[in-house]
Length: 585
Image (cartoon, rainbow, N blue to C red; front, side, top):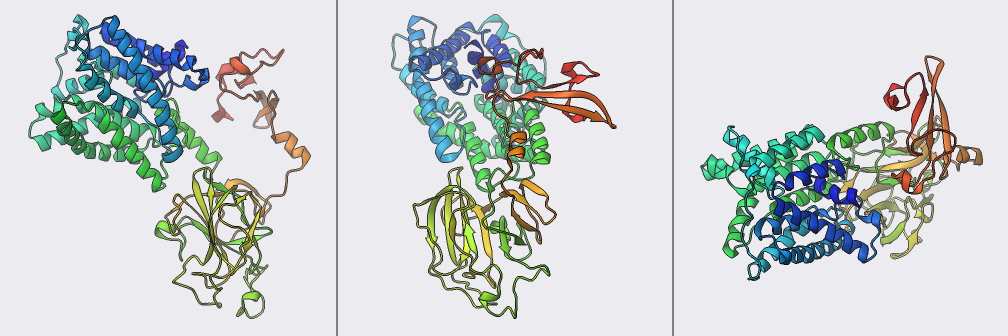
């Protein structure tokens, strides 16, 4: 529970679940004891309520469910004099924000595939602020500034403004708190620190050019939005790289207009904007990039951006395929006729697609004269489902073309659209007329026969077209994908990869019992490998299969091996056990 409470503090800076960093941030908030106490009360109240309604303890381990209640508690502590009535107000507001967070997390994940960030706080803060104006028993006034917070440093105005804005993330807009937070960021992640400063400087300088006053731009209390936008886009949701940094800077520049517009609108009704600009820009930017299949999207978000970079680099080398992965949509050996971004029709928005044909040993796609549909090896061969999902759309009444002609009116010909519950649609096109055997609404599994390969639509000769798209509409922009478990002509197995033009591939045969027993680890299995260098054994590598990243809670430790935890792996040999590094072998 204690670790869960402090993790939410680090989540505000988008540092993924670090209890140690969170504790240090908590200590900094206690420089203003009223604000810090209100914040910790809000977190504990949210956590206790979650246990009261029997939510699983693991549900709140990461900390991102409770950091919105934390921010609400800090807000109340910053504007209301502390009293027992304030404690009641904090508890009620934090529970309300927790329920709002749970609901928004579900909606955003299911329907948009997005995190909620601090959007529940942005909504809840407006409600809390307006409600507090009517509560006459609450002394609505800023809490007294403690002496340590009054400390200021002789530094350039831009740097002082950066520190104050960094402190303002936790409603502590002072140089001393900003200095503490900047040191934590620098120690935890150099990428986060550099993005924070670059985002702030870009936003302030852009606004100063528009406002005509650098001082006025620096003094704006909403500048912390620039810091959070740069961190979220440049270092968290995109894989950190020069491209992600440029995108983050562009997002910050665009957010200056939104910040001023929202502030002007809010001032008409006396409503502070808090983190609303950050949430709109960050969530809107991430969603837009995901729709365009931007390749730099982070599929794994580490504790820090450095972890994300490392994981992405390793994954790219180990798993060259995509997380949108399909089984082959046919039986037997077929040949790749077109690959993504090829010379013919796979261009522009429709470049992420594959065309398949069947060829003979001389790479011909037909026998005889090739003037008739029946001359082609793949014509009327079975096409099977490459995914498990529900049939969304079926068109099956388009006539097959004569060889060499194409139907430009019905580009996709007879086609099937399958909705994969992983969040996208798979389209298979150019079926033979009236050969499709499934109907909209039916559920299919990989390998289920869908119909027969044909020559309908924009197809000069019989072939099978496959692509993946986000939207239901036919002709929507395509997305990167790859194929699972196939072998090429050299009998090389590809677990998840992208075949190239001319490759003859087929589905890998079912694994035999011995191979399955060797590679399919069961819970509790201990695996031992010998490590060799230059032909000589230098050590051993041990691992044990577990179900959780917290082995002490649910995974029994192996006996008589002297290991500290079962999910740790290391070598035994010429170096101490904690010196093992995978890049050494």
